[in-house]
Length: 321
Image (cartoon, rainbow, N blue to C red; front, top):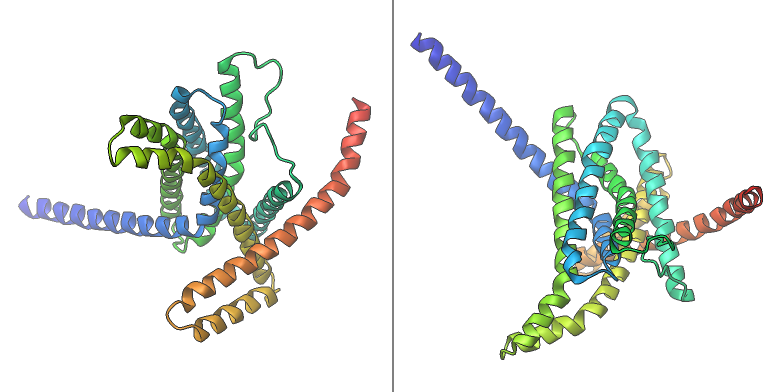
């Protein structure tokens, strides 16, 4: 009896060790996957604050919470099962899907650059508000729904990049990694967004408090947030182009067109060898910059083709309506 109990305890200990190793491996891969999707994560954090602009200060955090919950549902309920089905039944589709998502990021990044250069921007903050939205709740709901729709695209790219970076073949570990990425990214992005949208309120409180330290810190926050938000939007745009261009370059390499990636690697290695100490950083910057240039060109071509293809259909649709 005692021998059977000891054997059972040994089995429990062994299973616990296996489970712990699996969770540790999943956590490590989740961290790596989240890092590879950093560009899209940055853009997600840069895009979301605009959906809170124009709403009452006391509603800012509840709205960020609603968007975060919608983002988590996007990842867990829809994108995770879709990713697992893709890895089981059609893993060969992952690279084309990633490239389509990368092309979309390039297109969005190009559109933002074009808006900045031409002075045209989306005054609605990404959510169209129609005349029937006369009460605060309808206005808020439209903002939240618009943010969640935008998040779906960015979340899909995050989950696809994460899935492509998982080296563990076990399906259970893949699901754990994707779930961990969903939790880590959502908490990180919307935690940062919450701090950003409330920073001016914190600054106003500190400035009114009037202490020798709190007053200048508060004033710095109040006056510093508008330029910081502009800088964040710029970083988000660059991140979209950098990530989108990098995905396209890597995808082309997967299909046998290795020239662009080989050229990037050659330039990076040359810079790394020529500049001791900070060569690695400069090589990374050169790679990111070249990816962003490729992304901008790809986005411009996509925008041009979209205009040529979509405009006739839109005119036909308007005539039919």
